[in-house]
Image (tube, rainbow, N blue to C red; front, side, top):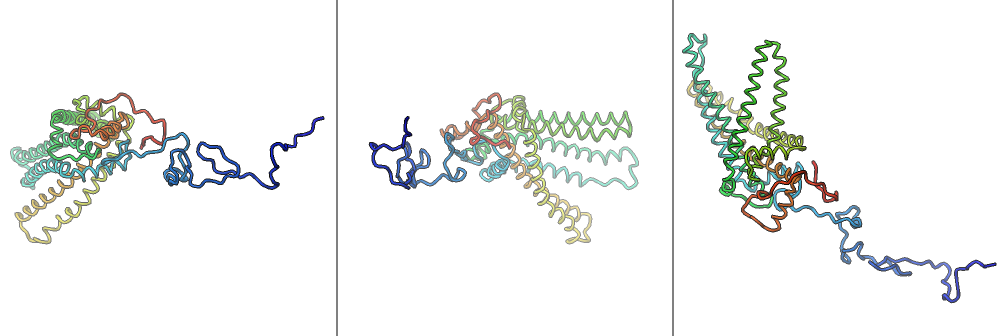
Amino acid sequence: MSQPDPGYRPEQGPRPPWGAQPQWGAPQPGAQPQWGSQPQWGAPQYPGQAWGAPIDPRWPGGGPPPYGQPRYVAPPKPGIVPLRPLFFGEIMDGAFQTIRRNAKTMFGSALIVRAVTGALSTVAALGMLGMVRPPVGGFTSQDEAMRYLGPIMSASAGILGISLLTMVLEAILQGVMVIPVARSALNRPTGFKQMWSLARSRIWPLVGLASLLLAGSLVFFVVLFVLAALILTGLGPAGALLLLPLGFGALVVFIWIYTKLLVAPAAITVEELGVFAGLGRSWALTTGNWWRIFGITLLVAFMVGIIGSVIQIPLSMASGGVTSVFAPHAGASQVTTTTIVLLVVSQVVAVLISAVGFAFQTSVAALIYMDLRMRRDGLDVELLRLLESGEDPDGVPGRRRAPQAGPRPWPSNPAQGFPTG
């Protein structure tokens, strides 16, 4: 009958004393733990860390990164925005920084356009102000009515023409001013002359785009007006009940198309596309991002409008009391002179405010375009390559890159992903 193994044999050496327990020490990298060794404090916590180096605070709990996962590295930000798809706050901050770094270029260009259109609008308004008042008893003949209504209709047509000219110039300027925004992403300043020199070859495509958008807007509203007239003619007063949903639906369609074509001027300028190719490019880039683009555009327009109104409210309130305070018994000529002076001052202030607002809105639209290309085409990778190589320092970043088909693939590692908001 076999005996149980006591677990100790004399040939193995003396028996360890009773009560002594083995003490484990901290294992060295690549070595086995030794009996009776003490922990080695300050040893590397994970491969690649130097002896005595502090724990990386970027990891939760101050510990090492999970085994097998790469360390997170923040994307570079050489200019106004980080070179990755952008958040809303980064778009706003980038627009402010673009205007601050290229103040003469962007604000100067916007101010010239606004000053020209503002001066024409002021002349038209002064022309209407100097017209005679209608007779108290009404018009006694058709000739008298035409003498009164003719100048008013001419002035109204002039104001409409000025508004259309403003739309064309703004569409052109929106495409031109995307150049300093794209260059600022790589911290490259852009002068006034340099901006227009880089945009020289794109002026005529931008003019064609502006003309096409203007013609499309006119046709849209003319068709809407004719349709409303036909409804009122055919149904009479009951047709007015259909005009409200018709007008609301037309407004929704117009806003939807406007948002889809928002980045067409930027695409024509940066990617050197034609008019219709630029429209198609804008339509493709905004697919799947319509609500985000609409929300950003609407919020920016609301902010610019509120700020402009707050600045102009004191001037409007003061204009109403200037005549009664300083000239309470003024004659007709003095009242007219005061009104003209206040109109000119108000127009100057409005031009300055609108120039700043337009420069900011244009910068936001350009950053939206860059964000869409980063998400779909990997433009951030191209910008990183330009940043590292220093290639084409006087050109437009992204101009030489051919658009890729399909959306940008989602990264396999969430730690290196890009935002969706």
